[in-house]
Length: 412
Image (cartoon, rainbow, N blue to C red; front, side, top):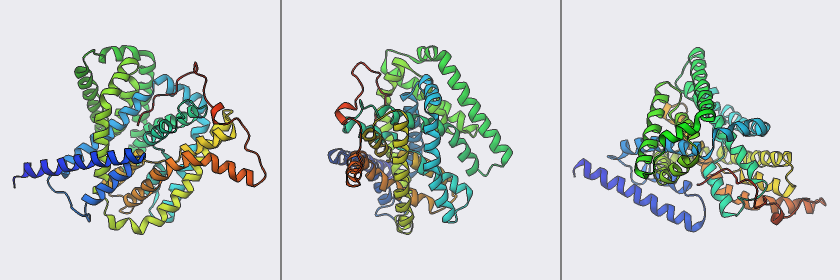
């Protein structure tokens, strides 16, 4: 059979399968990410039906998926949002990083993987899944709750931290020395700072330049600009994902709204391809040996995320019930953890890191929605059994006033 025909058959089967898996996940009301990862495991090396002709195209689609994920996250926030969050919520960001990155680093050292793998695994356990959390908040009807802005602020700080973290990881994985690594980080910080400054001062002019009443022209300009900047960023050894994130931040207002609407289907398509691609490069037989460490890491970091959300919410005057809900909501890991692990897998740093990250994400992407729903009632039951009292108003009184500020846009 002609190679192009094989490619079309394989890639068509992948897309059709992803659509059916997404529909199944929607009916079961949970994230499709674990199903996409399992599909990749089934079609990768050691799987049921390894791919051949379409693997190279899937790899390119996966790279575009990462770029679109970061672009869409950048579109969620304005530069003003980021600056405000840095000024008011940075203590929560520091606590979040310390409590959730250290367990990953410690596990890497316990497994004897070395410092570079420790930095990577720290990122895997640190970053929550914005997409899964946004969907959970919508499904549970909590977008108007008083604790929700605290949750979103932590997610914003995590997203912004990636602009610093990813260049560091990229330099380490490339084996760059101290001087080269410092130069890469300096360039990344300089570019990020410059983009934030330009976005705050001249964001309207940039948005006006990109703006178009024709959806087709708007889509082409935004997508083309994003891929161009991502490519330049990668050429400078910064990170294509960071470049895309900064483009999203620079756009605001109606342009950001329009681009978000137009690019959402493309993001969903290529993000799904990315998760499949990650699974393709993970041998299913390599997961059982790392299942126990992944489970231990999931238990520990689920607890540290709950503690992070509880502390941050209480610091902002939220009642204990709302604070428990905030903590439980932050548990899910997903797209970013896989993005970070994918960098290490591509660099060939540690063969077992990819399987461990896959198992870890599979566990927490399923457990996350459950902790979001049940952490508060379980905590209340435990406190009541111990003779304490979980003070604060009930859920119906824990909502923002109708005339209050809308929470930051977050869509799955």
